Length: 94
Image (cartoon, rainbow, N blue to C red; front, side, top):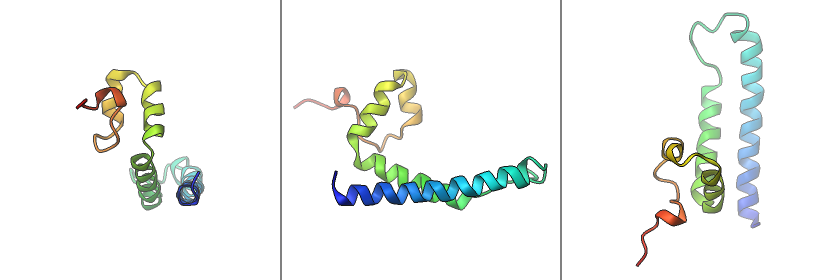
């Protein structure tokens, strides 16, 4: 694994840890106390983490293939964006 890829994964892991910590506190201190008033907590941290994971998926076609292989084919298009790498079987042959 390249050091750049490891750095990206470490960055995403840090963002996930920050989001998880924030969400756990929000869930415990706000949501379970009925104080959320319909508002979500930690949205900015979630957006940063989600963007990091989306970038990682765009750069790692084999990971996307692995995820798709586990999914029901009729659902794969709903959950994985069209801008991510396509399955090998869907690529056009010359």
